[in-house]
Length: 172
Image 1 (cartoon, helix red, strand yellow):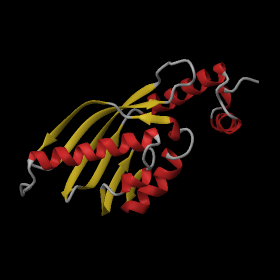
Image 2: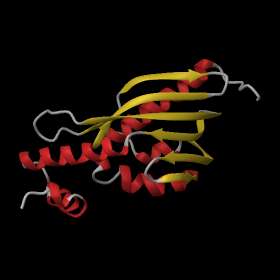
Image 3: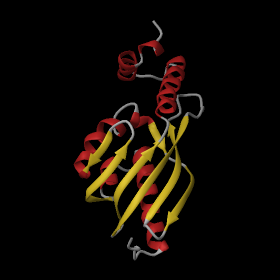
């Protein structure tokens, strides 16, 4: 197996760009379109619920409805627990939280995930694999929705989404 030619510093800088980009997109300061610029044209993205997404447009076909619209649009930050860099293979592994917006009372709703990034050079990644407990994420969204409904901070569109997807969470 060939060893990569990238320095630890280059790998760290690429990771930091990725980390800043996802947090800017989540906060609304940036766009999820900016996220696509972090990848090679032939990127393969493994997302547990969506499966294998090929190319930037394959990622966008998932990201736009999943991340830019409700409820994904209410995931506002991805604070890091840790990351490690495998210099030999050009791979970075990070454990982050997906933190949802404040439902209105200052409470925090979050669930962890692992992202594995394969570096391709020129600041771009050729592959990303996200690993998380699907049930934990679904429970997170339901719990956040219940709290926002209790507080009356939902709009009609969000209530309609919950009524369609999780009718058991919407009071009569």
